[in-house]
Length: 582
Image (cartoon, rainbow, N blue to C red; front, side, top):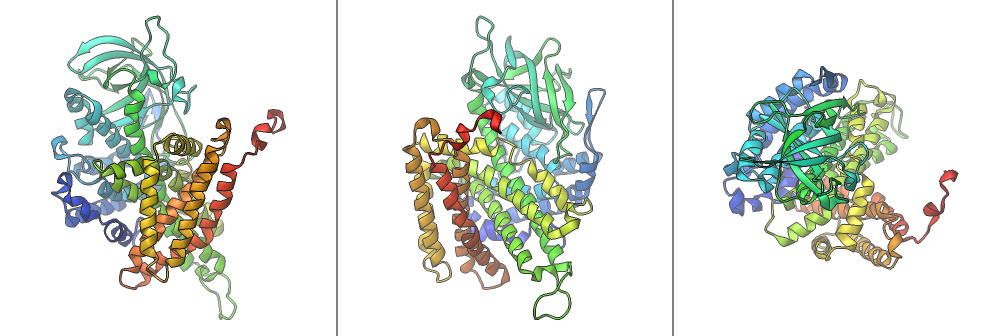
């Protein structure tokens, strides 16, 4: 193993043999690209990830950002890596030529990003947020706002953040209290003075980029000075650290959050408006802030899922190499000691890791391809349905893969001498990033299924059925196709049963439904990959794909039944538990 990141053959299989990326080049937006141009970007990404991101992985964990005289100081190697990332055009890769970008499909950009996330998720977090920030401004901002604030981010000179949470609000954005008071108009649009506090702001301050563009959710006071209730009163503002005239904006770092992972990412509590108010420019119409922010949030959710998949994948590669090299114990009928990969329990763990890590990566790349088809209503509907799954399933099961990696390493696994300890800590943040698992369950079951028009579900059912029909033609996969059809019917029955529950209790077990739904979706994508692998030349790589698929169906898919049973349960056990009895 030359390095423990993403195996290039795996990416090539997913992008070309399975997802048929070449079909995207038929669209005018991507007509200038080919497999050769994408391969060149992936070559570049892999080399840079190994040379300048992986090389400071442990150093950034040990030397966390620190606050000195109101300034955040970061490890110098982070700046070096991101300057090279910008110089090679990777900030701009996914933007159109009209914005100075390369016009690469989001699928190609996601494959590129997987190398950096696997190598150093904390450093990779800066460009992930920056590109999403710039995309939102380019989509909803005025031409002047795009030129002033998006273009410098697209070149990688400035970085961006998203400022949603507040100390008292957490995930409940209806409780946001940051205030934006009108302050006239200028060439950049409607100007405001903002005051309030924002918590958990990744990249909120740093000494890496020339400027930081904050996208801030805030409320415009009513005529009586009170703030409007609920999320409909939220508006979105561009609030730069350094103003266009070169003056420092009224933004200060109140403190740093010291997390168990992602330690190289400066995570800040920011105070806006300790003086006369931080100057910001409104994007679009008042009260449209949350709808606009969902563009960035959904991109970040897929990015978080992809990062979690990459961390789980890297942990799997470490565990596999260790299991092949570590000699310990004997096997019946074999003379002498054997590598631990020969022990049945270790082989189970490795197959579970492979099913989780490669399944998570496949899920995120599949959704990335859907992003590249904005004019296809089926793709758009399916993407909306799968986004909470793409954020959550990799976050939960990429983390599970990292947990297994520690177990395979034995006592060495939880020492800092081996990377798997840090990989676990880094990945433990992802079930919370960009909406907790519980929030994603509410989104999937409530907004995307029970209150939706059913378009996304219909597309998923049709595509799943097509995979089953094709897989049924293979003797090795026919049983799996039947099993997946049955699991899908279980999902539909569970949905009908939940619809018949009292409205007040339908969402009580949304997380259990999300787990079952996510496992069925991942089983579908595994079967689709196995179908593609079975059509390729017979070798160990393709046989591994088919075996991992069969393992997922044999050992993981049976878990769906109990989850769905919990989701449709009318039990009020948890609700009936007295608070003082816990």
